[in-house]
Amino acid sequence: MRDFHKPGRSAVYATNGICATSHPLAAKVAVQIMEAGGNAMDAAIAGAVLLGFCEPQMTGIGGDCFVLFNPPGSDEVKALNGSGRAPAGIDADGLRAKGNVISPYTADAVTIPGAVDAFCRLSKDWGKIGLKATLAPAIHYAEAGIPVAERVASDWAQAVDNLSGHARNLFLMNGAAPAPGQVFRAPGQAKVLREIAMEGREAFYEGEIAEDMVNSLRALGGSHTLDDFANTACDYTNPIMGGYGGLDLYEHPPNGQGATAILLLNILKHFDIGGMDPWGAERAHIEAEATKLAYDARNRFVADPDHMTRLDHMTSPDTAAALAALIDPAKTMPGNVPAAEAVHKDTIYITVVDKDRMCVSLIYSVFHSFGSGIASDKFGVLFQNRGAGFTLDPGHANAVGPGKRPMHTIIPAMLQKDDKALMPFGVMGGQYQSTGHARFVTNITDFGLSPQAAIDAPRCFAEGDVLNVETSYDDDVRAKLSDLGHNVQTPETAIGGAQAIMIHDDGVLEAGSDPRKDGCAIGY
Image (cartoon, rainbow, N blue to C red; front, side, top):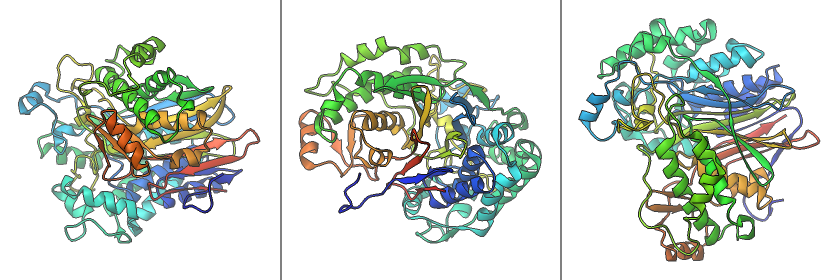
């Protein structure tokens, strides 16, 4: 139980259903959907699509998603890949001629949005109330407007220069980011959602809306075609699993980086994490060194599943043992571990559990803040820039190519205990997500923290040659980390955000929501 003399959040408990996400309006809508007869899938879709207007810098219908869920009355974990592909006509050699990386704020970086197809498929296969009812709240608020929340306003202001052309008219107010409390509206996207609600995925991927997106991208040099949009299709796939501290961790398979979280936890098993000061230098150092090694493996191997051949290597205990042996508890490793081609910064995460204990863990993003910064001319669909996650190395599994999916950083997760659903959870924060998953799991298992306490706890993250350390760490810890050889810095904003829902043995639901974001958990 938390110290009530100090600022903090209490856990949220409920028995019928609960949602945790990064904006209170989305959590409220998700609960209302369940109260009106919808299930966890309906609620998660409704909340996620609404978050595209509550937090437009983070996500939107021009983006991608990944989903883990279990059907009502079942503990089987299913996965759906809602990430889009590069255009069939993409010119890899032409991109290499332009530079060493794909320019993130150009049409070259825009992959086909996959989330809408995924939401339509999930609603049809697993929802109860249909798209018309599920999308109604987002349509209403896109038209009526939403007051901008404090964290959203801060992120928005940092990303103004990412926007270009028509997008600046749509997402800026008098040429500037909105202040907290100013009302943001997206009437063009409301029209898109209304068409999807009535006609399904074809309304987005074919006809007038698709023509608007294709024409807008081609005018900026993109190779996108109507066929690219019409051929977009999500995929059901099998989750991958690791374990730590008596719990089974389910992650989404590649092209997401979930295997990195499994590898990282397998490395940490070689150290007595539970015997360390949870907020001391020793744990932070071991986690940072393990992160460098696990992320180096990710950058080498994780790619489109049709092109990746080393998934078994990523999840093998032998790989983890060999990497753990490279870690010196007394000093940092020499040299830098390569960073990813592009740094992911923005996403949303929503988790919902309903009265039948259907669990949904859903993550949804446009990649960089405001994605590519490009919006379609007529309807204002903001395009992701996931193509910046490709490498231009022609021999790499993640090399850019026609119809390929790039490596993604966004990953949903679920924990089970004794083959029973225990906790859907997710950690936002770009590259931090795999480390965030590992830290959350070790907070729960090694230190016995509740979901809310595990989320509240201090964070640090080794990225490139920097160890970002939140201000919640003591100064003496920061000094010890510097003495170990880390380049300790304070990040501009708090690291990531997280949401989680625990299912207790008696059926009571307990949720936590990250104070680093504007959101909350709401149950009924």
